[in-house]
Length: 323
Image 1: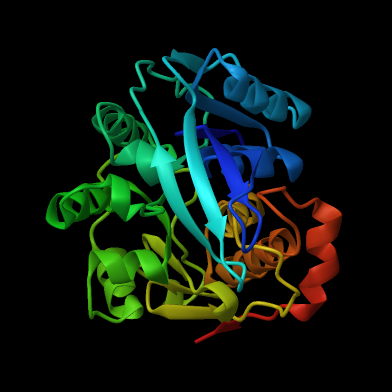
Image 2: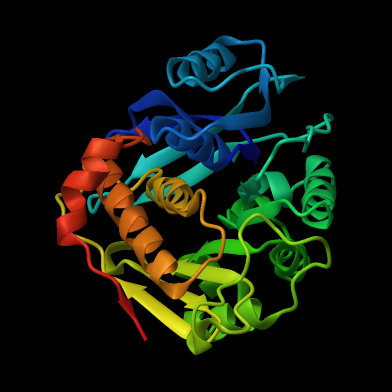
């Protein structure tokens, strides 16, 4: 299965906890997912844009070291930047210098799964182009994966942002969203209530996607969109048809949480790679791998992708239940 990841490339300037000193590392949610998929041994193309500057060199070098090609990187006036100040508990707050145009139209031929999200799908002028690509992929039978990865400071008015997110959800078959994102989109509503609503929306019309809905037993009957909610240290929960899959996170010593959600996304997508008919048991296995990968990246600074061996080493400590 070949993945096409579309979205922003950003140079993250990670702050030293308790100070105003910053270290430049490659970032951007879609870039992190593409690199992690490659690190987990999955074939992946990455379509983005970077500037012809020092930070652009950092990103190109990072992609090359992980075997991700640069042929689909469009030229940007300058490489986008994100400043991440790390708190005493390891959590990060962000400030952006961001621009996203996305002038290209990536080829969908040979692609089994398109993954996108974050700023790339919501901010202009590139956002509407990304959503058009999602629609084209869904119409062509390509599985579409989406992660809102909300950055409120760059999204403007909440109602407009919510409408754009919901447009993307309706185009996607696989949705991963953080509880924090849902709290911003739907203040006061429990995350599972929102996730169940998203899961119940009809799928975009088109040929059968690479991952079909589960049909293995009655509990999977009618399952269409998979919605996974990540809850940080509390792990993840997934809504799949009438099934609820819960996976606590393993306890680790946290260096920072930068990129943890992206590593979860890559690992759970990689684990679904090759699944023809998705069942609740497949979802449980994917959540275990996602929680293990996210835990690994939390033990070190920045979004350094885990190896298959590192994920495998944590799996005995991660259990998922299906209800």
